[in-house]
Length: 424
Ligand code: ADP
Image (cartoon, rainbow, N blue to C red):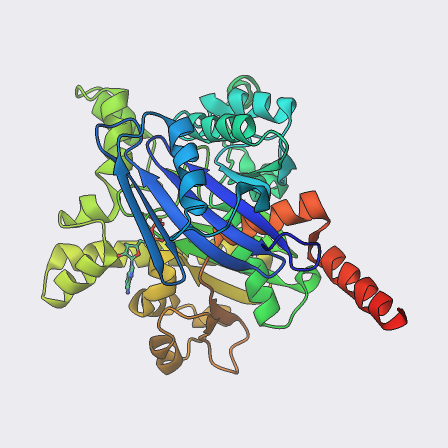
C-alpha cells in the first residue's frame, strides 16, 4: 500500500483519444511512474490493453465496446493479482485528465466540476476531434470513481498568457468576436514542463529567465517563454499552423486554399491534405518519420534532403522571430522525438544561430543521445538543453498541487512529522 500521508499519493493520469486510452500511475511527490498502459481499438471488433510496470507486462485482447468498458478494464489490469500495479483501486488518490482545448477560459489546470464539464463541451467546436473523447473519459471516470478529485489539464492553458498582439490574426474583428478565431497554441503541458525543467537544470530562477522551447515530435511547435510565461507560440487556431511537421503543412499563404477550391478541391479535401498528406511526408514523398528521411538523405535522395532542410529552416526562422521578441534569450530547449533524439537535426537548426549567441558543443550534442542535459559550449551566451518531455508527470504534479497542496506542502508535512517524532 502506498497511500499514507507520508509515503505519497498515487495519481492516475488519463489521456483519452477517440479509440484509445493511455494511462499512467504516478506516485507523488516522488515523481515516480509505477506503471503505464494503453487500451487501443476501442469500439472495434478486436481491442487490446497493454500494460508495463517494472519487469511485469500484461496484455489483454478482447472486444472493448466503449470508453466505459475500457476504463473498467484498466481498473482490472492495474489491480491484477499477478501483473498489476496496485493492490486496490482505493489506493488511487486523484485523477488527472489531459484535455486538448480549454478555449480562452482556462489559463491553468482546474478541479473538475459541472461548470468545467460544460466548458469542455462548449469548446468542442474548437477541437471537434479531441475534446469529445477527452470529455467521455472524464464522464466515465467520474461515474466509476465519484469520490475522487479529478483535474483537467489543458494543452492550450499555458499559452493563455500570450498578449493580444501575439494571438490576434489580421482578420476583421467580427471573426474573433463571433467565432473566437485567434491563436490558442497547443503542446502547452509539454512546453511548461520542459521549460521549467530546463530552468532547474541551469540552476536559474524563472523570474529572470527567458526560454525558447522547441517541441519537435510528429507534431511540432516552438514557444517563446518570458519569465515563466508563454508570450507566443507557433501553433494557432488549430495545430496546423507553424513549423513543417510530420504530415502537417505548417504556415502557408491562405490564398493557396482559394486557388485550389477554384480548381475543384473541397474544404474537407484540403483540410485532410494539409493535416495528413503534407509536411515531411508530402515534401519527401517517402515518409513522415525523420529517421527514414535521414537515412534516405544519406543515400542521396534529393527530396528527403530538401524536406529535412525545409524543416530545419522553418524552426530556425521561429527561433529568430522569438529571439527578437524576447530581446534576451537564456535557454533554448529541444524536446519531442526529433528534438530529444535527433542530434543531427539540432545541429542543422543551430547552424547560423551563432549570431544570436547560440553555440552548440558539437561533440557533446552528438554524445548526449536521448538523455537530459546541456549541449552548448560553456562560453555560449544561450544555454542549449535537451529535455525529454513528460506530460503525464506534469499532469500528476498539477493534480497533486490542486488536490493535496503540492510538493512544498508535502515537504512541510514531512518536517512537522519529523519534528513531532523527535519530540515524542
Ligand atoms: P508524437 O508527436 O507522435 O508523440 P514523437 O515525439 O515520438 O511523436 O516523435 C516522433 C518523431 O521522432 C519521428 O519523426 C521520429 O522519426 C523522430 N525520432 C525518433 N527517434 C529519432 C532519432 N534517433 N533521430 C531522429 N529522429 C528521431
